[in-house]
Every structure is written in C-alpha cells, then in structure tokens.
Image (cartoon, rainbow, N blue to C red; front, side, top):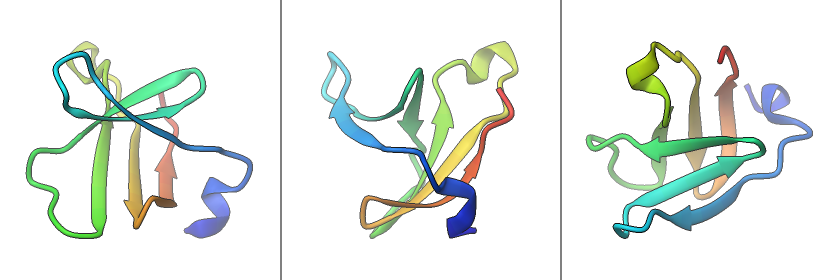
Length: 69
C-alpha cells in the first residue's frame, strides 16, 4: 500500500470555505465527511464528474492512492 504512494508529495491546505484539501499535483482531493481520527479518506474534487480517484492518509502520510482519474 505504501509503495503505491512513492513519488507523490502531498500538500495539505484548505479550500476558500475552510474545508480540508489535499493536493497531489495536479489533482485535488476533498476530505470525506465521515473520516475521523488519524486515518483520513479523500476523494477527487471531480467526483461529481465520475472520477474514481481516492487517497487514504494516516497522520498526513499517504498509505493508499488510487489514481484512476
């Protein structure tokens, strides 16, 4: 799982509305609303356009990255 994330440098930020945002150039991911604790699930901001890319982080380290955009 961790090997899937090699070479990707995550950048954590917030949206203009103050919501958590994960950026892995050139893609952006929103935090799933049901994520709690140190293990966070993220979905591509283009999810409404059928994008299936997801990321899972543990304490700001990528542990899984499905990059099927």
